[in-house]
Image (tube, rainbow, N blue to C red; front, side):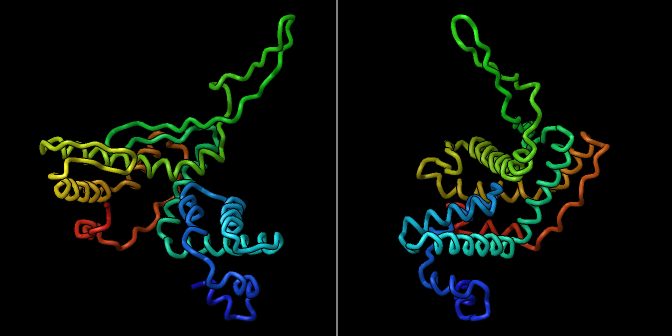
Length: 258
């Protein structure tokens, strides 16, 4: 839709690029960028992802046009993600800010999941390496991990997805426990949940109920309170304002989890 609008506006700075791309952009062209946006993909990374897709699909032949079109699409895609998922974007920025407060003081990001599992991010800077020549051979030595400073940028960009993954894993554990208490078999690989065919309908109800239970908790409030207890000298920013989505809608959603 954005490309259509830009292509019809002769005064838009990317009018010519929008005309070149009009009617050619399928979901797969920007899928990787959308999926990796939560992992902190940069503008340069997004442009390279989209350029590969445009080149593979032979949608743009000229190398100069390829660079310009991928730049335009990367900017448009990232801007639309912020516009469409404004609340999620604010939460991601809040999590990154919390991680930055710690990493700037060479402190690792740590938290406890709602299940009670402690988590600590291990990211350190690459070690300094020294080649020591001996009579027999050269020996490569590197700095011990415990003495290396934190990788600050990695701590900041990795915390939002790691925190969300820790909630997803908590949801899986809650679902597994409920299934066990009801005498049902349960297995999972990543975000794929399995049980016997006769119990699929009941498992579908349980996983929705446990999602509601988990995300009905004051998750960010608890995280901020825990950080303030661990690091009382740091001034953590206020929690982003909640949206107005009714979580109970997931109980009626056919495709919430399928």
